[in-house]
Image: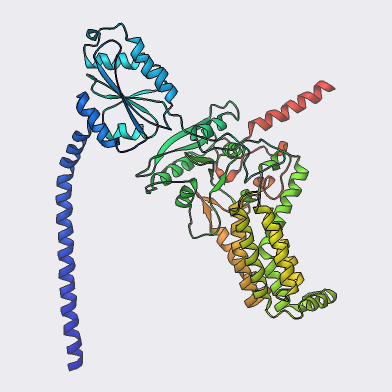
Length: 556
């Protein structure tokens, strides 16, 4: 009893002290929060007041020099308007601003156009600002009344114009960022199809979408992302086809992104997906405008970010990762055969090494007798079990693949092929692995190259190691368990509310026309039901069918 009292009294004292401490901290936080809320409006008002231009040329220009003068690529140019003594100045960023436009359409226009104008012509600030806006031959002319707004636009390529007596700055669009030429996508090569890929310039990418054909339904909405480094992002969709709820969901997820800077669309892909713990990608990335446009015509949404050639498509189903744009450019029979080969290649990539391990380690009786004797003869002298043997070769292949990607282009492919042959031959001669293991690993590696989507191939290669460990522990039973767990995960997985394994679960017979096989175009009269499009009928294909019937009647 005394021991219990000796234990309970210190415990109660500790709890009481801890509760008082937490309450004190809580009260302190509440008081601080109330004090902060009371001070926020005054601080915000004072900050906005300080940030405003005051209309004094000397002071406003000096403030801009203080903000941007430490940057060596920011240029300040002072001059006078024509023959008057009215002072003016421009601020622009070397490299992003077009110096030819600045010289010809800003400096030359202002200096020469008002060469015979007296200072009395510019009487008031409002009139002066109107004259400047109407006499500068630049596409976009905006007014900016804050220092931070002016700084932000100058750093993106605008030219800021300050004139003595003018209350605000004029922002002149002289953006001329460096970009590369439009080239064929490297990661999505096709034999038949457009040789055009996206670039790092957002305006070029939206223009490539517009060039697919005249379409008033194509809507492109601009948003800003990034807290410290602002970047432009656009959402593209077909207004009369896409489900409005899908567009709102995409907007909402993008608005919740809270990062300083988004260097590439891969950041967005990771931040807007439904399940970040899943090994399967739930957002498709592509460099091809035709793939994006085809997805938009089905009722999907595309996301394009400035500074990257990779666009994102949502929602995604697993069959999209095994499809190529070329499937729709060839006739349906060869396209269907090639698509079935891709599904077979995906199965080999995922299960070939694990099946080898299961049969060699647990189920030798299921192997035909002659083949079993041949396999046992080739494995004679190999000191490792089948799992270690497979892991050695698979890891070596993955290292060679990664090294081939990172090396310079003239060396990479040669090193990958030669390295694989040399390592495989040396491993067999040294008795580390069996020849049939080299064949299995080589077949697996070749099959993984047939996956059109690079990140889908990475997923299958990653899951292959899980399947190998399952096979080494439980044999075929382990492979079946792994397959069941994989299927259950895929069935539960969704991409923006769309089941990932559609149209198998839930089953939609109409959508199977473009699933494992690609049926003739004239039979694909409707868009996928899983996307719930506002207009479910492919009107172009119906018109095509009517035209064909008209042609037959005319021939008769």
